[in-house]
Length: 194
Image (cartoon, rainbow, N blue to C red; front, top):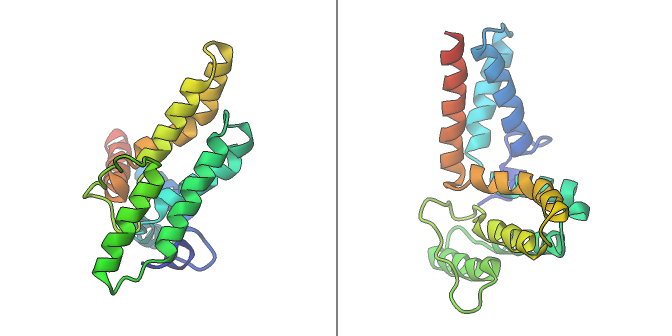
């Protein structure tokens, strides 16, 4: 697949920011606000293109990591950086024309991302080849939170890590599942107005 930067709907915008902008515009239209037809058509096109990008979970995780890294408990910031780097290495080495290489790289990446030497997690079938499996991220966050002493410190750490856990929930069924959920949310906005 293409690199996350190349796969973005436009050269100057990243897919995750395009998705947010398109959803904001579509939510406004479905709430009854009037926008120029060019803006509406661009939002529909951007929404469709951006949600087809299998790198969305990676891009959003990188963004969350950049914002929260210094405030994350224990070694979680470094653990997330390692997961991100490992996944970027795996997708950078991929040659889409060789399916056997893709399968081998995906299997190797799963083992490296899972961080489990004994039995690497099986990759869910609903994930695209280059899509980041967020289960190791969720596991790293939960392990880091479990290591924090109970009380106010753990509450603060949990609140700090919540955006990352929310991201893991959002993509629990992959990009396609998150896209379906986004479409359902837009339909819910429309049905509330109507």
